[in-house]
Image 1 (cartoon, helix red, strand yellow):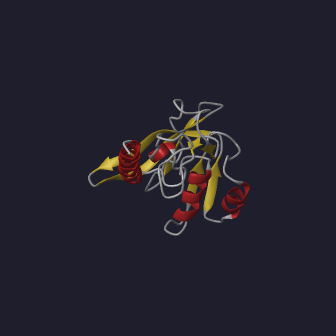
Image 2 (cartoon, helix red, strand yellow):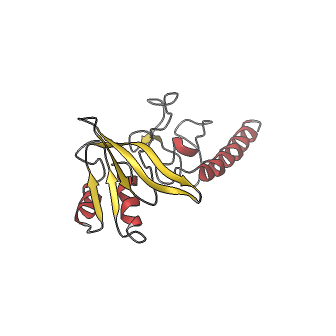
Image 3 (cartoon, rainbow, N blue to C red):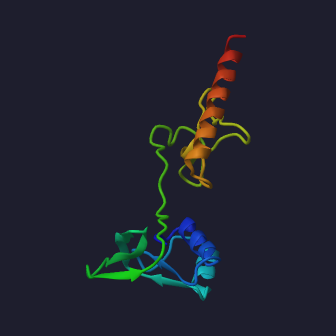
Length: 164
């Protein structure tokens, strides 16, 4: 598992249900995840953190196709090492593209546009938001597409109400 935030820690913990060992690779020596998640991760016997490292290359075979390991680089010394593994999961997070609306609409979790529950309406009448801009939980293309449809329907209803 590559990352150090909530998503990476949650996924590393989840992977312990299937793997005999999970290595969490992080570029610093402390995690950004919530303290309760950090405590669970650091106490888990199947999880080994690898501090001050970043992914350099995923290694694998062509026949049969599959991951065989990773090459990681120490962030301070530049020294590389290879680690055998059967899978690689990257959870390095993202920041929503909120530049257009930041400071203009209500936000939650610092960076996400707050929408009315069960809707895509924002704090500005006639402005609708969807997908990764509002969703700090799922952050998946399929949920973003569904929310995009919701926003289109909400906008259509809003415009129809303006004609009255």
